[in-house]
Figure 1 (cartoon, helix red, strand yellow):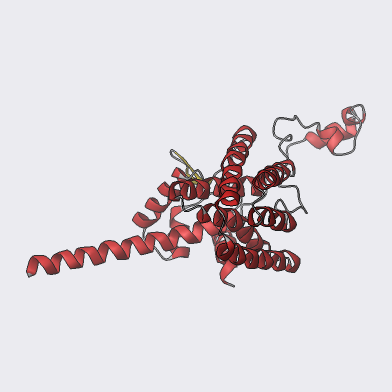
Figure 2 (cartoon, rainbow, N blue to C red):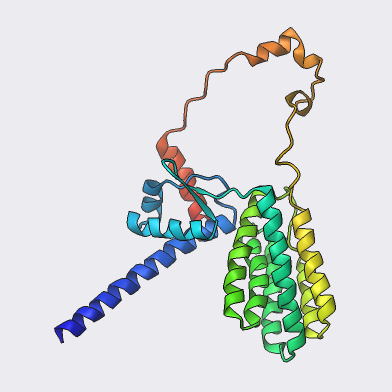
Length: 279
């Protein structure tokens, strides 16, 4: 009986630890997906432990998992940062999404009998439209990504579903990094068109619509900016000749660096970003 009680206690402790890790991972992942923690943001352990009210051991496990999903980058002697995927990686991941998701809609359009889940997804797309019209960016981003994951889940292929979760999470991060301001990379109407094609069994059209949709999402990203050298004189509206005048050369004089913001101020900003969804 003692051994049995000890085993039950151990199981309870493991379950509690797992729930805590899941809670912390969800908070961080949502802040990344909803672009409240932009790519390149440093994730200091002490601040995160205080904000999330968790232990350093739990936080490190969560950061390891997020690094495995390529949402976080861990740099030796510097700490953890929200990942900054390169243009080349971004193009590769979008190409992978097209391969996976055209296969998803092909399978669904051919299976038949999909009415129950189609109705549920259609209702969710309505919520997606409402969030977009209301300017609720975080909720809109989450629902737009969920549309694609719900299609994968409807196939009943758990391996595909898990793999696509990781890929969709990566593209959410890439959208935060390369998105053109003022644009929505996912079209609500295109989601509805894809659903219609699946529901009526038009598998070739469903594939084409999904591929066009994902190509359109990628084209709205600023993927040609990364390797371009910036000419400051052009960027600031000066001709190259004017930039060499004595008056302009004087602008190159060393400028006294601004005093760093107090740590308590930085922590306040960081806390706001993590807690934005709970307000």
